[in-house]
Length: 149
Image 1 (cartoon, rainbow, N blue to C red):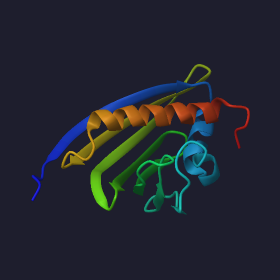
Image 2 (image 1 turned 90 degrees about the vertical axis):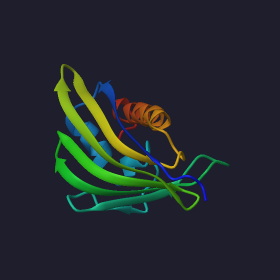
Image 3 (image 1 turned 135 degrees about the vertical axis):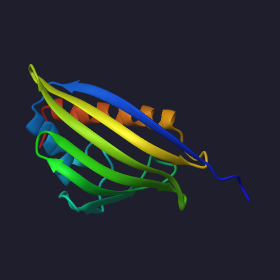
């Protein structure tokens, strides 16, 4: 049997967007807009107590299953959710994520804080932090772009 262990970690990723907090919040809250920068959800119930479920990944890459429960929603200000991430039928992490949206001159400062339990070496905080940064860069392209819906 493989050794079982948990690595606990917290990381923070910040971005500033030339878009209003309302627009950034909408990009998280609307399933069609969210699918432009995150995986297309199979289940999307954006309310306190609601859940989100999606399955996907890069072409010819691993399939990831994301399942989230929304715990706190303050429109245009804050989103808090817990989530699990699985791949190949194996749970690789359990996390709580907090998104803070702070109005700044000409836009929004987004602070993404994740507190995670990374399981058995299947993922690492460093890899997740890097992926989160790429994800938030994708969000920025959508909220700052002309094709925003």
